[in-house]
Image (cartoon, rainbow, N blue to C red):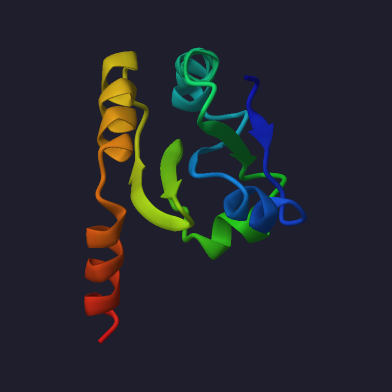
Length: 120
């Protein structure tokens, strides 16, 4: 599956309608972003059940600011509309696969309980 370009217009719908969403915050001038792009695209082809999306931080400054993106590339993962991972830096293919495996293995009831406990 090709990656989806996220914008302020489609962001909420994409998050709401997909079980697992992996977002790459990037910019065209960023060399690490450009070198990570083929790895991200290859993973999107291998995992048809996951939506892979990109946010161009130059074009979508409001969206990048909403998530306090300060370094790129930054990967963010939503599982069932909950942010379960957010970290700056490009991952090698094996690291991205480990992240995907970890996200798939999450007990979302436990994650939601932990999120609720932090809010108290």
